[in-house]
Image (cartoon, rainbow, N blue to C red):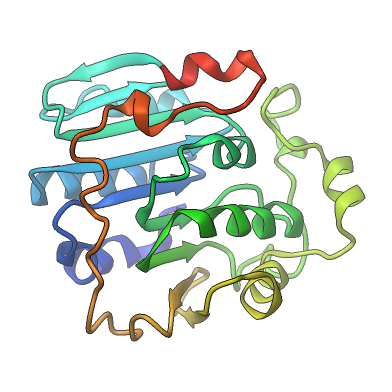
Length: 255
């Protein structure tokens, strides 16, 4: 998802106020958002960490990324670019819920782009897990709050090319866990009753919405709490993504 102009406006405003941005994107598709984010980060910052997660890393996207220079990039445990260790791009082909359950609890993100499986169960649980990884100033940009999956579920398991994907959450699993449908109810329920923090929802002129902590910052990002943005300065990617799951099949992604 391209987020229809939000990437540029966020970089010109909120992102540039963070000295060492740590960014997570869930749902990469063809890299419509990823590539502009990485390009802006590489041009604007001496240090950054971008983390991207998708159940399928498409070659149409990864082949473009491999042509970048001036960054260090990994896909799973494979180093694909080794130019600048201070400018890190880490991609993982995993289910977002599995990923979020197993990353280092100390890792916090400044900005989160959320565009994974478009169903109530997945979105609600992604947000609940993400809440462990936010600062006071963190913004969560959620796709499809007012789009076609606003009030109905979508399932990647039913998309062409994803039928046999080992990372996809099956439709029957989603239905078994929740009778509710849609991205908007999931976000609304998270903000109103499921969250332990004080989130507000800022609508945009397009499909996404932005979640921000109204007791910590105002919607214009007038003040930002920068504490904690140096957490990754002296850590390796292995330390950051320390696997805690018992399933050894995931371990290679975190070495």
